[in-house]
Length: 265
Ligand code: SAM
Ligand code: CA
Image (cartoon, rainbow, N blue to C red; front, top):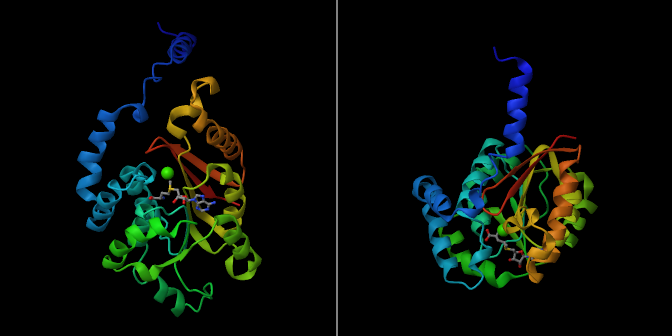
């Protein structure tokens, strides 16, 4: 007869042997390609496909949000019925365009009907990046898709913009449904603190690159010099959010790691 303790022991052996510690999605190009080919590309909206193809010709193309992460974000935006969002780190606008396509087309109209005071610019997505040139690469496609009116692009570092939004507490605190952070890793914790005030309880803050090419699980000596500083910031960020009682989290291995934070208080 197999008693409980032997089952327990067996499961301990199982754990000790770490059977699940294989190379993982991030290290398998074949599996990533499989996901893209079977589930992501066939459903990718045509403006996003066009933007992805235009971006592929740009030297910074590796910075673009991966289409599988984009698909997940589009789903999250729709699940929470997001209307007001913040985007930190635009580049050519893949994640920005998918956000604009995922929030309701009549979002602005609905808000006005309900007489809810919008920020003075009245836009639905506040998109921040100090580099307007790369935003302008994707802009014609955003315009052609008919969603530019939902975007308020601010050419700036993100922190001063967030601080300015927080100065107008009455209108902005707890007023956003969703935020996506995909910019300088050194400021992730600074963004987190501010966004936790701007996003409403029940809203989501999503951070990209939280596995930093898998380097978070490697010893520092094994990591190339140019990746070390951001790796340290990401590890500090991951440690901090993992014990943050104001949020629920899920770190998914989509793309380069996507941490989904849901504000609960
Ligand atoms: N989400 C984008 C997409 O889907 O294509 C990719 C963003 S790319 C990884 C990072 C962007 O962050 C760059 O365009 C860069 O100019 C911007 N960035 C860097 N430092 C920033 C800062 N302090 N505030 C806002 N954006 C910043
Ligand atoms: Ca990214």
